[in-house]
Image 1: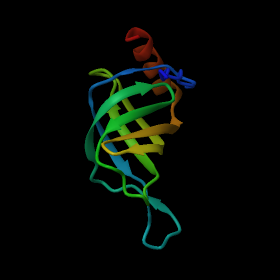
Image 2 (image 1 turned 45 degrees about the vertical axis):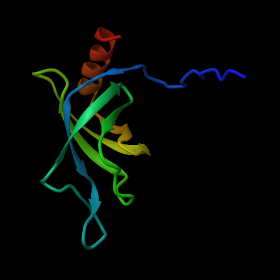
Image 3 (image 1 turned 135 degrees about the vertical axis):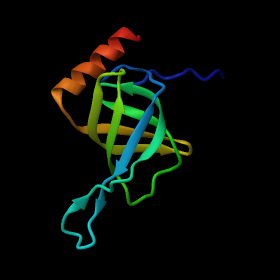
Image 4 (image 1 turned 120 degrees about the vertical axis):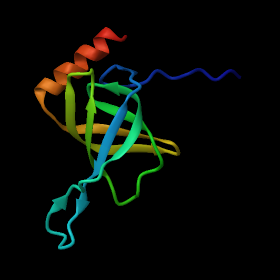
Length: 117
């Protein structure tokens, strides 16, 4: 019996986006009362992007890290900063959903997706 591919049920269309992305794991402070973002980021390669999230080519995330700060340039002149939560982790790739993304950055991403369909 031939297996048919199920359609994806995504809220936002995604497109290929090959660019460097810097991520900063959001971690508990030593006291455990606040969250901290280390000054040293990790540069990884993006696979695709949508208005709702981003897929990154990277080693599996530490299981204690579920929130990251993400920084990248959508185009040469449009930096994007966002906070995102880890949604899936599949060997060499991770998927993140934005949890904090300003309207201007969301608009830039929407325009990029529309231009690259």
